[in-house]
Image (cartoon, rainbow, N blue to C red; front, top):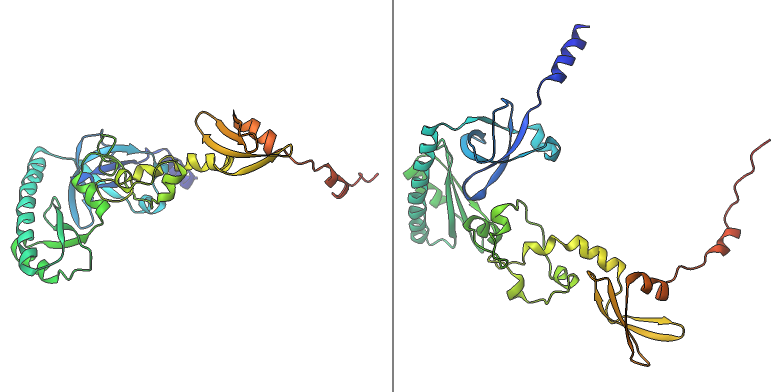
Length: 303
């Protein structure tokens, strides 16, 4: 009886809250608040890090259902709202990051390494300093790590990133005139192909379809599922169909207006019809009543 009572009390206790916490250059991670702090977007918080503590800002609250199983199983914790002296320390760390970036670039030139330094991020408690770089080939940076460790006396991590991550960290504006999606909210990069542009009736012009990173625009993926549905339902352009002994070619398809332009090949007359009319005329449902004689009959109930 006591166990049942304890179980009921445990179930009625307030559930923990989950948040997305944002760090330098829009780096984000998921955290759990077990202390039920009065948190809102923009609040500076001290959180547990992989080794030590870090300071970031609340980006948004997320429901527990949005957390994948690994994040929910071992979530990092939000410790408390940041104090004024902790925020001052973070600003001091930013100055040290600028100094470290300058020194690292000098060491890269001195060592003759084929790499490009993008950014430096120091953990709030100074237990780790991460240097982000890009390189076309594999780089042996062991001596560079020793050079940096001898100056800053902390754990040094060099992390190679791709060109898309480089654009995320540097930031900028897209062709639409708004801040880059990868900088503002996009967390994961999915593969993008030129087939997306073809499916969306866009001219395959790399100059117009590429972002600042030189890769195809991530926004090509946003509407791809809609166009996949369109391409399943609508006919392909230049395809030939027959009706009443005449041949017709599909000249143009407008998904959004639900218009299909067809041309009679013999008379060269042009007509615009909707998708339903196209199906009724060129893709009528076949009569399958003859199958009834072959299908098994329902057994009569036993008396």
